[in-house]
Length: 127
Image (cartoon, rainbow, N blue to C red; front, top):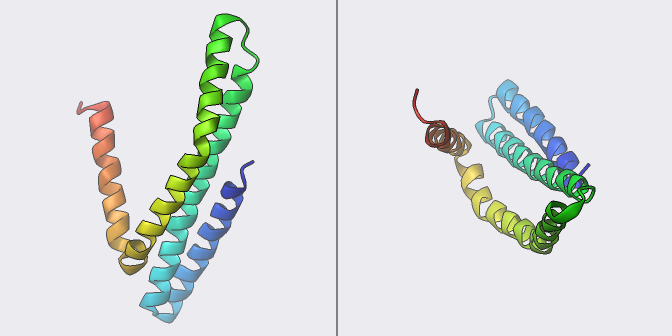
């Protein structure tokens, strides 16, 4: 299990607790900070899940024999070489977005929901 899954889940739960404390005490700032922490934890957990999925696929591909297995192993080797760049990009993006999410957590949540909805419509089309 990737470390980011664990730390992400811890941050998510800590954010939920902080948000609940803000609700109980009426502290809007505490509640907003809790929501931002929860969102960061969720994102970090998802990145960890993605890394775990890549590792699982890599393990399965290493067991495939023949030309297809060779191609899969080569693709995974290339992906592994580029993974540190993806992790760095995630960190830079997280730092860039963090201030906006902390300042307006509800707006960030609504924007993320809107993007998710639009992606769903684009991928699945309208029925």
